[in-house]
Image: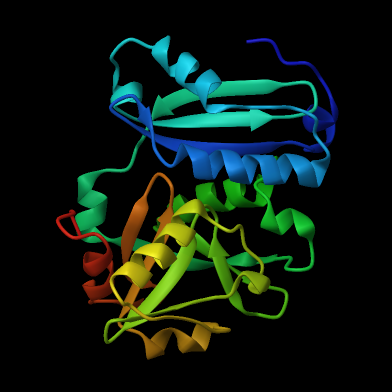
Amino acid sequence: MHITADDGFYFGLGVFETVAVEQGRPLLLTRHLKRLEEGMAFLDLHRKVDGAEILSYLEQYPTSEEKRHGALKITVTEENVLFGLRASHYTGEQYRKGFVLQFSDIRRNETSPFTYHKTLNYGDCILEKRKARSLGADELIFLNTRGEICEGCTTNIFFGREGKLTAPPLTCGMLPGVMRQLVYEKAAVRNMEITERILYPQDLKDFDECFVTNSLLGIMPVQKFGSQNFPSRDCARRLCPGSLL
């Protein structure tokens, strides 16, 4: 793999997408490519990535664990378009148990346009994801500069009670997740209400359900967030009938 040093390499002016691959098929690829294009437009990157190019890349792989249940990374800078494939490490046991969350000490900057695009300025997320393990957690959740709950290191977050969902609005400062949007669409089909509301740490007690989402996880139930337990999975099960939830 050859990488040309450019502003993506030197300054993080690049974008990426992580696409779930199941049985050799990239899931929700059209949505990921749309968000990739939006990120490239934001950074004024004059590159093109199409689905045929990605499918051709996947065809190079023989049957393997990465191709059966994996994660495809697409990275774009001004001089580079790179693909990488790895196995997905999420297990059925994690869905049965549910995630444990803690708050991050780092604040998400809701005033920065980089917050709303999946760029190579991703250091806070990676370092906090690694830190989560040392704290006995699966994911750390960011507050913004106003102290509002916004998103996780690699996830969006939802809360539930009595069959209704509540989510922080995008303006709190978060990446508009592909799976987050899909949750909204599935909820509409199932006549489930989603209310967007500014949430603070003290509001956790208002809910008995919580889950986080991203394209690799799908919907991951949360068993505990800080000291707050979340025993219900009613909304998650309605959104994903027949799953491990």
